[in-house]
Length: 97
Image (cartoon, rainbow, N blue to C red; front, side, top):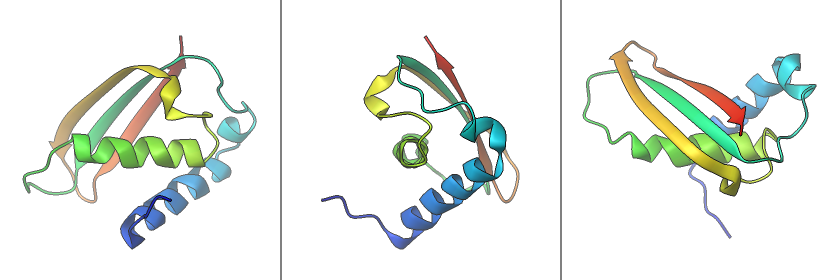
């Protein structure tokens, strides 16, 4: 059993809601093949952060949202930290290989 913090549950729900509101994602169906994922993180402030701490939450939320079946499908993962711009955000591009 996996324990999720309140913050993690809120993030997962926010991702699910966003995906449901954008019909182009709902209509394309779940991805079953091998994947490349590119993530760009815009930080909300100048506090020191390890970007790898964000990756698991993002991938788990996308899997839970039905974008892909399992994060085991990811063969190539690229993560880039961008500038600081409140409130912060992440941009994700997923490509089937």
